[in-house]
Length: 317
Image (tube, rainbow, N blue to C red; front, side, top):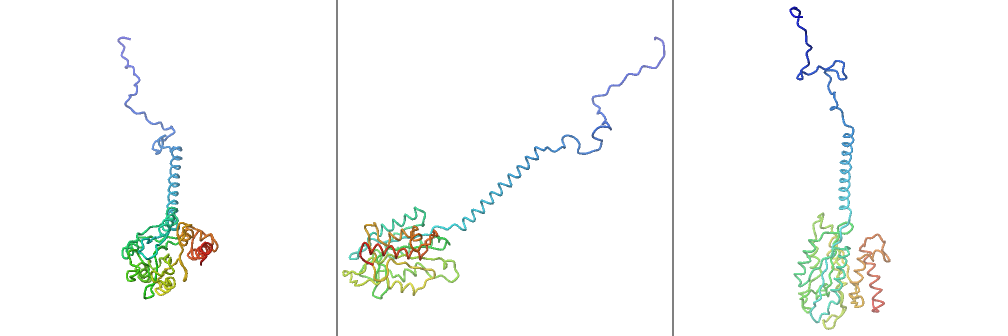
């Protein structure tokens, strides 16, 4: 009422929007406790994804290491193709008989390269010194192959004869059939191509196979050749030099000649050499069918099939 002197009425104070409400002591998260709140909880979906990602990385890493190990094993155990170096001479000087079908023999052997049986390379034999130099370069560049990666094969098809010193010789292109000093002695050929290395050097352990088709002429009155003893003298020289890991395979034995065969579009020896190196020597007669052509298998195959063909078609041995 007006005029009464009483205390003023107290108005309730409203909380300010600036003030923070005090945490309730009875709430679910007591004051001072760490790690509380929804943000601190781990997401199960994320954890599963992380585990799967780690497993993928581990699986891919294992696969990569397995492939790498397999590649290394493949490099170590897979045989390389054996190199075959081919050299022929066809332009012989008169009155020397032509080296018939030698070019066709060489072309047929080079098919083995296309079929990935051997790694073939050809040398153009133009003269004595140039031919030797090219053969030596090819041999130095060749990477040994075969089951044990230690074999190199060289095939030479040139006329062969014996000089006045009873030395077996090859008559290269450009050499006169009347001048034996222009011929290439087999002794010199082997010394230049296969120099003896000191014992223990890796090169000394490389196996060398020299295949010669050099007995096309048994006798020739125009040359004064009564009997060609090339095969006999060849064996003596090879044994005398005794070059480590060298084998020489000649197209004939003593007293025989190498026959040309137009029916086979090559020489008899060249045709069956191609067949034998292409696997026939491993599967026919004395072959053991292990998918590897050994020297003995090749020799037995050539003796049997060349001999049989010559007997049936030339009535000779």
